[in-house]
Each structure stands twice: as structure tokens, then as C-alpha cells.
Amino acid sequence: MNTRLAKSILAELLEQFPAVVLLGPRQVGKTTLAFAEKEAHNSAVYLDLELPSAQRQLDDPEAYFLAHQNQLVILDEVQRMPNLFAVLRGVIDQRRRNGEVSGQFLLLGSASGELLQQSSESLAGRVAQLELTPFQAREVLPSNATAADLHSLWLRGGFPLSWLADSDARSLIWRDAFITTYLEKDIPALGPRIPATTLRRLWTMLAHSQGELLDQSKLAGALGISGQTVGRYIDLLCDLMLVRRLPAWSGNVGKRLVRAPKVYVRDSGLVHALLGLQNLDSVLGHPVAGASWEGFVIEQLLAAAPQAQARFYRTSHGAEVDLVLAFKSGEIWVIEIKRSSAPSLSKGFYIAAADVQATRKLLVASVENAFPMRDGVEVMNPLMAANLVARQG
Image 1 (cartoon, helix red, strand yellow):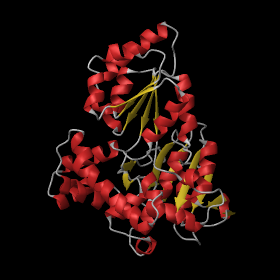
Image 2 (cartoon, rainbow, N blue to C red):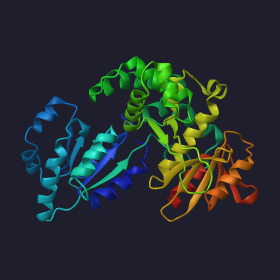
Image 3 (tube, rainbow, N blue to C red):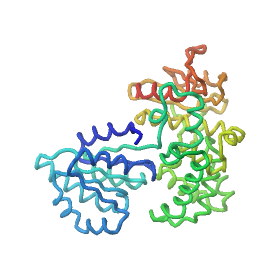
């Protein structure tokens, strides 16, 4: 098993909090990570709430939890039983009074919206949240990774079974099956009655418009549905951690700023599968290549610093930067992303950096070695940049 960077973080959170919610899309490795944690707790118990037999064991959840005091209880796909959160609050408070203050519950979920709301409302002050992303370059590539290594991860994406497939062709077969299963089984199981063909068309259109400003009316017109319905469908894909809305910078800089968010399909391998791109040559020859690379890099950086506030910056006069990271320390980094191995910057980047009062300027590109450019810009590849961001964030 590849060592996940989240493993040590999860262990630390379980030592500090009574409950931890581990979030991530399906097939990202949550259960594998949970079983690794289960092995560290000899008496831990595990229930998969997708199974009717497991749900029956929780017909009386308070009695079940009472029978497993002083044990780590792992509940997989906990969004299936949202009524559990109110019970968990009472159980945690009772255990606190008995001196048991941490490591009581590990809750796994593949839908973030309702789950986060339920946990924050019912378990405020008692729960920590951790997102498990698909494999990141920092987890699966050597520190001296080449451009070819990074391109391989970019092509396949980070879902474990896609990345670990023994050929690009088999990786694509897995990703195609993953998309179909999500559309035909997993999403309907969560409750929404959405035609699979409509949602696939929307997902594919989002892949085609990777990194563009979100225009719901344009999408609605192409799909023959209302803009409000498009918004609900995108909300769902965001809740499932399959799509990201990147908001625009909204600081007071005295300029007319773009307000619409950008939208990205979060895993680059899914972008390529949705567009039918079978290998690296087909990706490089497709108009989406640059935007796909941009989305890939953004996911690497945001996974490295999940607490940083992420935005993009664009004015109506053309000043623009792909990513602005505001760290809790007060540092503001501006990051431009280029797929070229000989990247250059426009005047708009430097204007944007001055507008947001950037303390550090990065250009992330397909380069082997880091090097400086004028005005303090640092050029590096995505793995180097992710390591740098992780140290700051």
C-alpha cells in the first residue's frame, strides 16, 4: 500500500478529538486507510452502512455504542444514516464524563455537503474533518521526479486503481467504469433522481470547459434545463468532491474584478476519460491540455495546504493570476501555471501580484529543475511547488 500523507494526520486527530470525519470520493482509499487505523487499535470495530446487515446492528445505536465502549468504532458511508449524529453527540458527552475524551469514532463519508452540515451542527467542538484526496505527486513520485513521471500521474489521475493499473489502457477502462458506476448507481443511491445521461453530459461539458468561468445559463441552454437545475447538479458534483468551484478574489483593490467562479473537474484522469483521451499524445493534442494541466497543479497545491484560502484573480482589464493562496500566517502567494517547459509571464501577472500585495510569486511549469526569473519569480515543477506550499501551510 502506498503510504498516504493523511495517515499520520488521521492518527493525530484521533488522539485529540472524540470523532473524526474522513471525507473523500468513492474509491479514493478511505476504507483502506480506515483499516490501517483499525489495525492500530486492536479492539476497533467496523461497520459498512451500505450493507443492510450493518444498518440492522444500529437499529438501537445507543445500545450498540454502549456495548463497544473503550473501542474505536468505524462507520463507513455514514451519510446513509444521518440520524446517527444526534445520538453520537449524547454518547460522546457521556463518555467525556467518564474520562474518555478521544479516539471514539471514525466516520467515513463520500458526500461532503449534508455530512459536513450534520456533523458541524450536531458535533460542534467534538469532531475534526479530514479530506482524503486521490493520490498526490508527493505520495507516489520520488522527490527527483521527472517531467515524464508527472505527465504519467497527470494522464491517469490519482485514484488508486487508475494510477496502479498495469497499462494506460487498463487505467482508462477503470476510469470509464468508475464514471458509469457513479452515474448509474452511486448518485441515485444518495437520493437525487437525476437522469444519468443528463448528468454525464454536464460532467463532460465541465471537462471541456475545464478552468473556465462558470456560465450556468450557457450550460443550461445546451442541456435544455433551467439554470437553477444546472446549479443544483453542480452543487451535487461538488459535494461528491468530483468538481471544484474556485472562487474569485474579492479583496478591495479599487479595480473591477471578475466575480464568477472558475470550475474544474478535480481529477485530471477523469477529465481525460470524460473526453475520451486514451494516452498522453491524445491529451497533448487536445485543446483542453493546458487547462487540464492547470487543474492538475491546483489540486496538488490545495491538497498540500488545505487550510489556505484559495482564489483566482482577474480584472476586467486583463490582470490575471491562476491561483492566489492566503495562508493563516498572513503570507499571500500568487501562482501562475504553465504546461510549457520554457514558460513566460505576461504583464498582467505582475499587475495582479502587486494588486493582491503578494509576498511570494511562483511559476509552476513542466520543468526538471527550479530556477529564478526577474522580479523574484520562482520557477518550479508541481512536485517542488507542492512541497514548498506544504511547508508554508
